[in-house]
Image 1: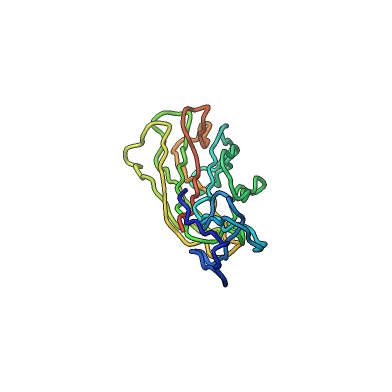
Image 2: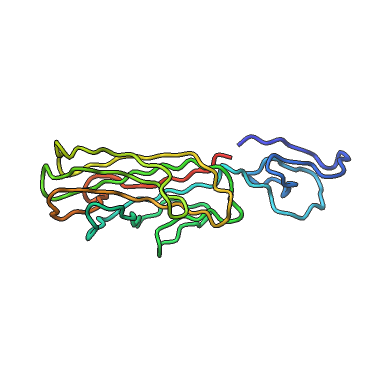
Length: 200
């Protein structure tokens, strides 16, 4: 990351504004907008870069026992990245928190798998914010059922402006003959995953 370096021994007085409204501070700290050198009495935390908040989780096991013809929350069970420690594994949601409100790019992929071939009629991936769907992608081929494993990606750029705003990943499968219907993961050779990246 590039820095604007300010030597405070040169007689700078007053408050130096930075892009996200903070004042800046710890000399040499990485991941901040302004880097201070010299002697300073400013006692405050460094101003974090907003793009250093990100999350990635995926399915490392199959999610079985799911309902047919309804939206099912994806139970991501492997969290690879979570810089804000915002993932709650008890209800499978990511909450932005007061320190990380901002604009985010969110993308998710869900795979529905049925053990019987040529039975899958509808598969959709849904991104939910605060319990309501805000983005989805999928297909409907009820007149020409397709295979037994299908996955789609949904994505959106949105504002998470409240500390309590949360994101969840959902899957909507519909098959005409339920036979081991599940949300697939790595054991099935697919990636069901959710990425959340702060962009501003």
